Image (cartoon, rainbow, N blue to C red; front, side):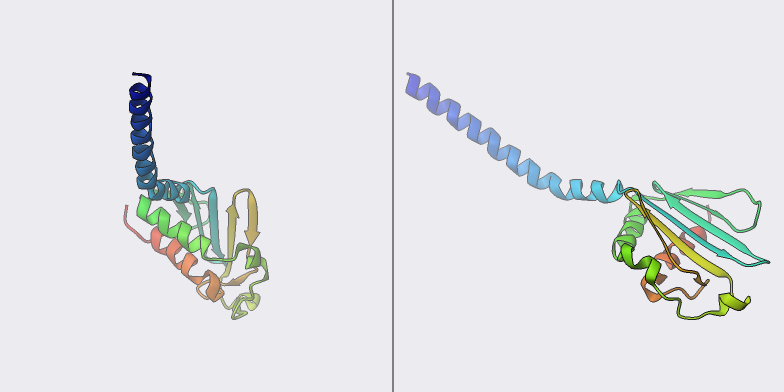
Length: 156
């Protein structure tokens, strides 16, 4: 009788363990997706001249932007797909290299173009780009900056 009880108990434990492993495999992509969504990322882009001003900030699935000095910031909550795109574009960049990236042109040095900068903060570490011509960043940063600008050009 003890043998049968032990055998049944072992079979039940194995069956529960197998279903537990299957459920873990099913939730793995969901867990990875949640980790991507919850990454501690903050982005700031600015394009400034004497006559114009644009500032975009993305933090915690919220994008806020100002198109004029002393104007009230507009905000927009990002959906999961938009946030995932921002995170993927950010993760595609070697963040440590951002401060060393050269601007392809130098018109911002003589008032020929707005001065652009990008600041990326990830997990408590901040990386700031050198000044570049707004609209013509280093190619490494271009896709992320274009995405940030595109998010602010949407209608509410």
